[in-house]
Length: 332
Ligand SMILES: Nc1ncnc2c1ncn2[C@@H]1O[C@H](COP(=O)(O)OP(=O)(O)OP(=O)(O)O)[C@@H](O)[C@H]1O
Image 1 (tube, protein in one colour):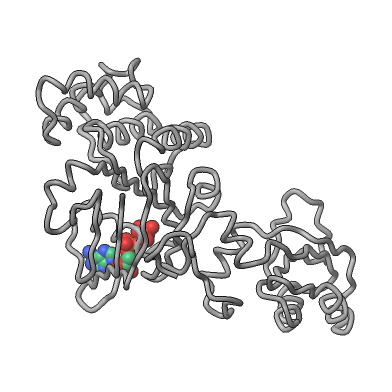
Image 2: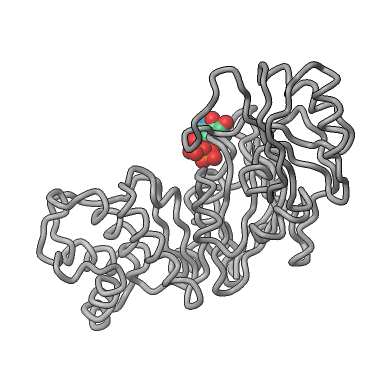
């Protein structure tokens, strides 16, 4: 449904994205995950026809975003980071207005507007002026304007930014309910968002797609899904240096200790090991040899956060070629 091939965008002399390639199948939710400035918004703006690419192609439902931009705009719904709302309009009035702009025939508009409001649970608010809505409801109106013309593809830029935890759950459920009948790309820098909402993830860093796969496969493929959590006495930075040099170790990070009762002189670390390697014995030996006391050591599964850190942190070499292998033509 969405095919992006070798897309690059250069602003002046600054490359924002370089050779971005991925595809999204009908009904899928793809999460575009990356740190600030990675190139997510640039990619989405090209896909929605708002920004020309420097090179490469992108197609929505077979239509080229550059050559057939009108056909593409009819088939795509876009929620930019800041929804383009008119604060003085009522919810229903605004959605009628958007439906008209999107080319929905006058006779079909009432039904399409009702359907979009129902999908986004906005019926109770149809006469409310947008300015008076909470941020969560405004976001729903933003999503409603993206789907009012019933496009097969929906692009959502950071759809849960600025919402409170309850609103986040509601908006995520709404997005999930749109999958299947719609093909969705959402961008986020929030890791749990991807595992909770998306069927597949493309990790983008410094303008390049560094991995594409299901969240589960990414974890298994890159980390073998395992590692160790450690409690040691001594300084975390020094212990990290020691552990980074143990063969088979690919990532060492400090653990958040808010749920524990941390000892003031202890360090709490997570070590992720290469697939197929069991460096437990060497980890313990290296720590003892360096003079650390080892208070606890237990095996754990890797998290998506580990994968993300591994892919977006430069100093570590990747243990293996990251090849999505799910769809032909995807970037590694
Ligand atoms: N209009 C512009 N002119 C020059 N450089 C730009 C422009 N827009 C974006 N960039 C640069 O391109 C790169 C990618 O930006 P982009 O907004 O696509 O990233 P992002 O992943 O969406 O980040 P964020 O989450 O912070 O919005 C950044 O280095 C950014 O500074």
